[in-house]
Length: 388
Image (cartoon, rainbow, N blue to C red; front, side, top):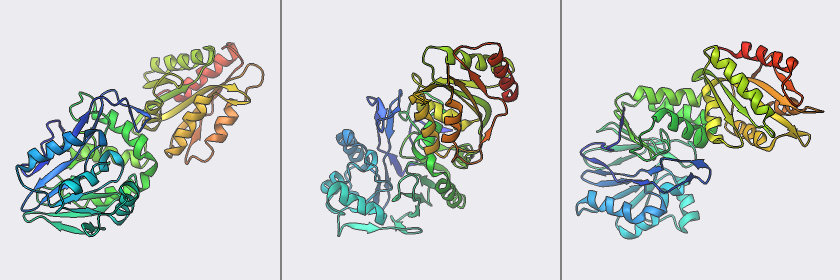
């Protein structure tokens, strides 16, 4: 269950913002339903603000904070992650509230010097694994989360309300009120943003398993509550690179349409057998979504033309994206097209050589120009091997 009202508790308020104008997150990920930059304030005997927001929303965020404070002054700013969509207003906050102390890891303070020219000494509190911050009626405990997905990251646990402030973990694309499936956009976010660091996410999940958690408050997307087992299980699957669903991803590139015809004919044959299939034209469709599906499903088909003695550029980009995100534990088949000297299959196999635990299909397809009786027989053999 997710809470699109962003209610956390009577003492913990959401003061974040929704970016409905953004087209590309991090300059590369399509976000049709915008993006949320979450910040929270914990109202106790002392007041702690959890992270800031993107630089384009300074005034809106400060107003949200001011409304939540009701005339009080904050005592602490906890900086869990120094990526600018969350830390851009640290210096603004510290100037506006001259008595406040900034709380962060040693690595975060080093980054503050890079971004702001200062680490705010002597108004800084360095925390590490197990450090605590007493706010009066509650104690915050800090847990280090290096490389999830930057090295300075900490997450924060509030033992009174049993809330985990999870930094970029459990985040998703889309505004907090976006009417969309959490799994889909959280998966695309995770694979694209965090996916390379599965080992580190597994380590953090192990730490979190020892905590009683009622709600998860990420820095992107809605507050998670009730069925937390669902979200944690998804993160366990994604970060261990296990198959999430049985099915086939077909990623293709085509110059004159012949390779596309072959790829879609395979998709049609698989669908007729009851197999779940998702096909992507890598030159036109969202490559991040294609990468997401390659990690989601059990099998992957790569179909491309021989091009300049190698492979078509968008396929090269796609395979490198898979490798950068630690693609592994899947079965892969190849469809190559080359009118006189097809080498695409060889090149693709070589590019994937460093990926762990890949099984290559027994049946692959070589097309010389257009599909003929021989290559169609190869295609049907591949469909038989890859069907559910």
